[in-house]
Image (cartoon, rainbow, N blue to C red):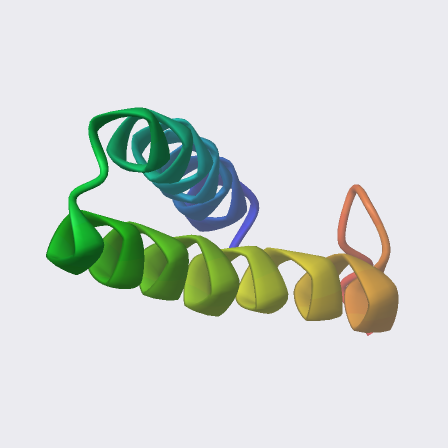
Length: 59
């Protein structure tokens, strides 16, 4: 789960960067999809860290 959190965290960061770039280019569809990726993956990483801690506990 530790490596999966890192990968999903990177996807969330790239989604945020893509959202900012799409806002600059005024691409509505890019804003929607990038923000959705940022929100979903970021929420997963946040809740995983909240419930299991970092590094995650085994039990």
